[in-house]
Length: 245
Image 1 (cartoon, one colour):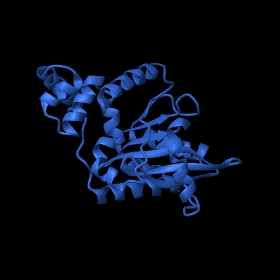
Image 2: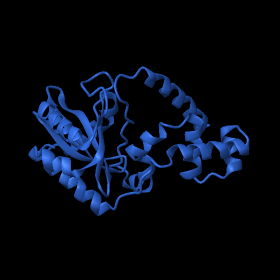
Image 3: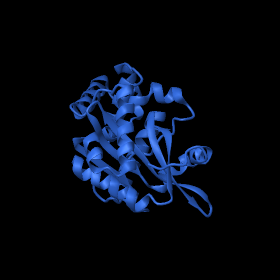
Image 4: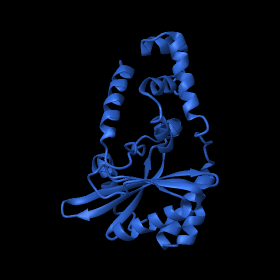
């Protein structure tokens, strides 16, 4: 039942995205309250993995997740998807082929922390050369405003262009904004918050796709409806961290 409802939701989401303004990013998942969830399901929740899954059709996505994340055998998979066992095997095979070559090995946690620290230091210092050095050559920056708030309408490609974009965003929107480390999708991200007359409001979530060689992607979620779930985390941590990204 859950799988069928999920397929219906996926179809609906795809229709909405056909009319989406600018790039689309997955809604962040707050894993701070449940560290075990982030540890056990880190790969499945990872922003980059979720973006890759968007390449698949609904049935392919369901088949691949049930097979790889939940170890369903093919007879059970066929029953859930209301198809034949042969067709279920084809769905899994097509899903794997579609993702082949795009998946990357998980980075060592210590290396991830070093890259993250270098990125934050360069961004805080406004150091273009240092920021460019921590980005891989084909890095990409994607920002999702959902057509509601200001965001780049197209992805930014290349280390130099991404570095300039990041510093430009921080210069333009960083005044009066503080950034709080949060656990989003099983990894450290930064929630940018601003003091408004109505209280502290989240304005952006910065997540990084990090590999051994450096930062592969800078993902900025600005769509207000996708940030709502992080408001409580911002309010609970705002007094502890006076700085900004």
